[in-house]
Image (cartoon, rainbow, N blue to C red; front, side):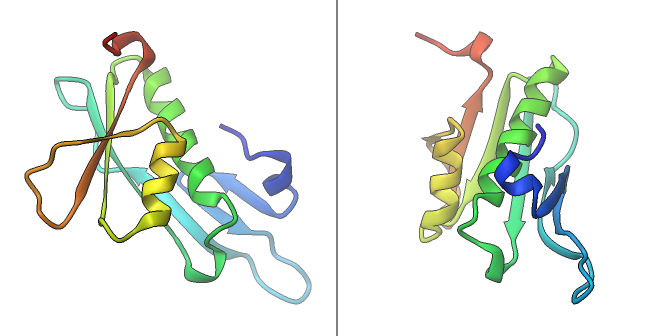
Length: 125
């Protein structure tokens, strides 16, 4: 997914990272990264992860990077479900996942919440 016009003017967004453009005053700076934990499993599940540098949070970078990861995974064809995890106290990350259509599901991990996005063709209901 290409960067929105709002972000494209200031950042180069390209999976799996966002980099602030270099200027005469400062070098290019990695401000966010995102990616897959590995290839899709036999059941068509892939896990994503992402991180945004502290001074760059709240600008929509994580939301756009997650959207791009989901779109890319679903377009791949064999992916039916995308999963992500977040700490219960990481309200911003939970918001990013929900904005991108993820729903919280049961998890056996006590320190992490688990979220799933199901490809539209595989959703129940």
